[in-house]
Amino acid sequence: MDHRQRGLAEEAVRRLRARAQNQRRLEEISDSLVRSLHASQQEFFADKSKKRLGRCSRRAGKTHLAAVGLVDAAVRYPNTLVPYITLSIKNARRILWGTLRGIEQQYAMGMEFLENQLVVKVPNGSQIILGGCTDREEIEKFRGSAYSRCVVDESQSIKTSILEILIDDVIEAATLDLDGE
Image 1 (cartoon, rainbow, N blue to C red):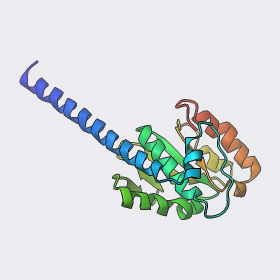
Image 2 (image 1 turned 180 degrees about the vertical axis):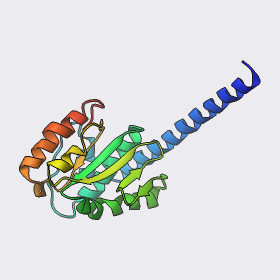
Image 3 (image 1 turned 90 degrees about the vertical axis):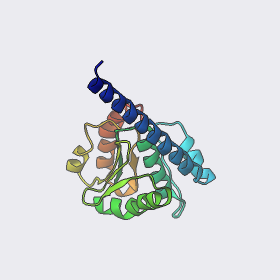
Image 4 (image 1 turned 90 degrees about the horizontal axis):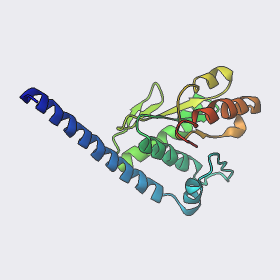
């Protein structure tokens, strides 16, 4: 191996180590986020069921739990998409965007917020994507990717026929590759 090749190999090893160190840091932050949940939220979070339904009162902490779940999945599965879906993109912004920003402010994970796209980039290459689901056309935007976790929020506001297609035809198939939830 000549001097140039050795230098390239050393640089590659340095970058791999830096990525691994950054991943460990993100996982530690994610663990801390999960520990910050109250007992009922932790119980819901720890449930190993692939499909979970949270039906609770207002102010029970559903939005914070959803945000923690999305961040955790984005951290645990580098270079993946983690969708948050509710009735409309406007609702997605209103419900979750500020909570994700609050997590970033408190934990300094290095997340990048793309306002116009409603995408949060995590330093390990994962992206939390916020979207709406008012009709079949919007459902199609969620096809094709593999998801480790997907959160559908305010599902009572989504038409039953749209919700069935979204969950049965799109999300269920998208979570198979990563054994997701």
